[in-house]
Length: 334
Ligand SMILES: Nc1nc2c(c(=O)[nH]1)N[C@H]1C(S)=C(S)[C@@H](COP(=O)(O)OP(=O)(O)OC[C@H]3O[C@@H](n4cnc5c(N)ncnc54)[C@H](O)[C@@H]3O)O[C@H]1N2
Ligand code: MOO
Image 1 (tube, protein in one colour):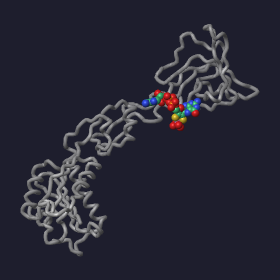
Image 2 (image 1 turned 90 degrees about the horizontal axis):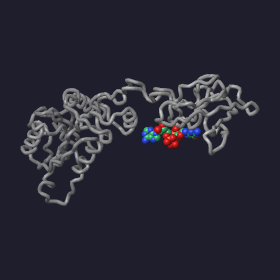
Image 3 (image 1 turned 120 degrees about the horizontal axis):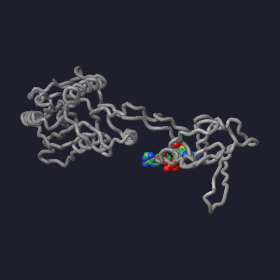
Image 4 (image 1 turned 180 degrees about the vertical axis):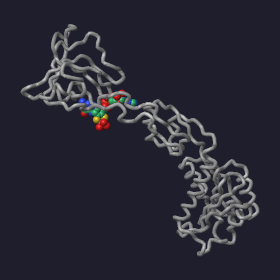
């Protein structure tokens, strides 16, 4: 059957048929193939084989969103320029430094505060007026230094002249990622934006499906015999586009305009199971030398569509060959 005006399908219907065939092939076969483990740096563009589940929450504990001082917000509720509140600095917390080191440091009757850097763990400490629950930014306070700079007696205090809101600049544990959250779903294409959450939870590699293997031919005696100076543009393009979409692409060479040899090439390549998808360009219209359809019919392929109401690309054809597992998807050229 040639792609006559009566047999053409709409683009939308063709895409649905294509997706249906692709989903069936994936569910029936590709998902059951063994995957491979790749380091995160090589995972972008690959399809996740399994769900990546967060083993814990991040941040694991409350952290500061600003560089400043952890104070009791309650102690600042009446703070003003005329009634400043003073806190004594009892230590410094940096990211990774863990809990506040409290070896002998005391506030000596004054409200305590802890210097805290962005990403530092909120101290589990309370002063007389309550828990050090909020961070006041370093630019919002005044620092006073007491004592002799040459002696161990030196100590610092901060002066707060405005109320600090409860939990100000405090990132709550689990705010970024919850425990058991799905970071990447099986079947999802991994993008660079997945790498940060995966890294933050200690993933160094991930399990992905093996790459789809695509075999590509260009057809036409003009390429086989090199009789004319016509450059093959579809072959290089289809390899590049397949690679861009995450496949492993092999260029299989040039096919001549001959039904028998076309049919034989399809048969042997589909049977080999070396490729998941075979793509041809050319010989798919209704010209005297357009033998793709006859060759496919000759090797028992099931044509899903041949001819769409689009221009350019009207004679495009999609077929499934069930000899091995390959789908054959010849496309037009012009
Ligand atoms: N008092 C103020 N504090 C902050 C202000 C501000 O205006 N006033 N701005 C905040 C904003 S906004 C940002 S953004 C951060 C920028 O901080 P830095 O670029 O100086 O980064 P660090 O302080 O070194 O680190 C912050 C945090 O990020 C963690 N970190 C750093 N590198 C990595 C890495 N490669 N992988 C994972 N995590 C990393 C680090 O351990 C800290 O936890 O400043 C705010 N503070
Ligand atoms: O510059 Mo910061 O990124 O607002 O958090």
